[in-house]
Amino acid sequence: MTATTETTETAGTPVLEAKNLVKHFPVRRGWALRGAKVHAVEDVSVSLRRGTVTAVVGESGSGKTTLARLLARRTSLTGGELLWEGGDALPAGRAYASEVQLVLQDPFASLNPVHGLRYILGRPLKIHGTADGKSQDDAVKALLERVALTPSDQFIEKMPHELSGGQRQRVAIARALAVRPKVLLADEPVSMLDVSIRLGVLNLLADLRDREQLAILYVTHDLASARYLADTITVMYAGRVVESGPAVTIADSPQHPYTQLLLSAVPDPDRDGAPRLAGAGSPPSLIHPPTGCRFHPRCPFAMAKCKVETPPALSVGDSHTSSCWLHENTENAQASPAAGTAGAA
Ligand code: SF4
Image 1 (cartoon, protein in one colour):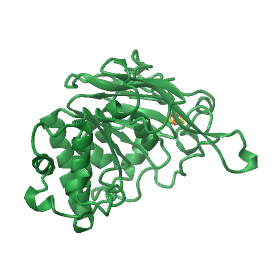
Image 2 (spheres, protein in one colour):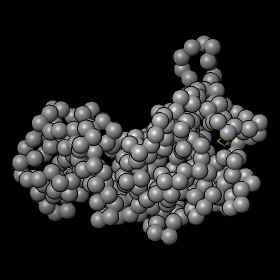
Image 3 (spheres, helix red, strand yellow):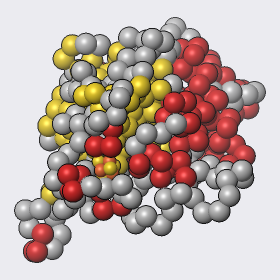
Image 4 (cartoon, helix red, strand yellow):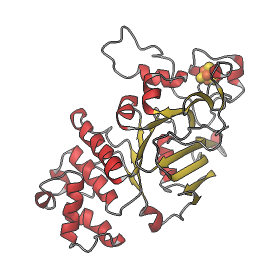
């Protein structure tokens, strides 16, 4: 089975596509688990498009970070394939890194504390030859200005410890931009930042999407920020995609019971009482994931079929799919014709 998202009308052309990705990690500890595997990503497809932000949303252990690492080729595939601009994927290595850049969650750990910004940003410019005929200092200042760290002639002199978390994350993004990538993979880029400065970094990503037509993957556990930034949302649970479609549609009218659970966790001053599905258990072990629908042990709507058969991606609206047997017999639900070629457009 494959979770699917269809192309939206406003989507750009696909840059990086993942088809039916699978990632299993061997369990290395404990004789009782000898030969066991962690089923981290199972049959996941996604399409990153020019000038578009695709959010991948889920709890810890949903496989969203592993998916980002697979797309960045930081870890090998167990199954599935990556396509680059419709053709075979570029081989891993410097050529791939110059097209696909990963921005990590922790801006404090991702910058070397012994080097200043002149070195941190100048090094990738030098290695990839992307200074564009400018002097290295001028190219570094231009990068600082692209991420709104101004005045750039002051920031170029700074060390990482002199910067706030938000400023460090902007430097990490500038370092990624230094190689002129077409794809930016942002793994929880604001989750470690103070709430008051998250919006600035999200706006920076939106600006890069619009101005530079970057294809951006935004990995987050926060449905509200995904709604704010993304064009499409793919929701993952226990290594599988459970719902995918336009961001506003999914955030405002989620169809899958798990997405409804996520939505209930978003603070809402207008909501009375406890969240709807609060306390409905925790994510399962991925060493022995539940059979059938992986959400069935937590799902208040689970039926006998859910425990044995994995639901396919069913169309529940325009470019909107949900992998849930509840939609099987509803009027507008039908097996997605694009199943197997999923994409968050
Ligand atoms: Fe719940 Fe069944 Fe739907 Fe899974 S397939 S979300 S268990 S109703």
